[in-house]
Image (cartoon, rainbow, N blue to C red; front, side, top):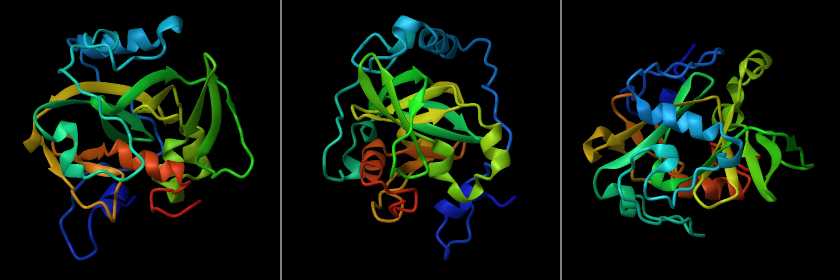
Length: 238
């Protein structure tokens, strides 16, 4: 199968391949780090019914994870300059999660929380990637079927049936949440460990590529704006 994200992230006039991650119909299991207490504590915390939301305002860390000091980076109504993001000013922490074999990274400074997947209610007239609305403690969460949003043309019945969504990754302080199969790891990255993409036009949802894992680092602010407009990954209203 062709390298899907390579096709998305490489301009037609540039021959270099930016990613080695292949799309397949099987799910990817979490990385087995026996000494990775941060990941174990994160998963343990998410599984607690009364603590299913991880509050990023907790300076001691999300779910027991030791975090770098973080500052508020709330979403605005206008697309912000990628170079002015808070996490572009030094080391920063990201969380890796996976969907249908794809590994995706989100800056913890832009992580609004993590929920266990619950019952969703479909709404008429919404895009097919809109899974529905989930109610959690009187809060309405707009749930995104991440596989359908990221790679709609690859989502045949076999792939859809193989998906095992377990978590909802909340995007900053918005009501949007991405469905994830597994939480993989939390890592502190330096600036030179990311291939930054500073153009807002072609792929506004993409902040850059994490070089070691060759996976996408989300620009959460831009992604929220695309979702608010009902746009898919190609920036076309679904």
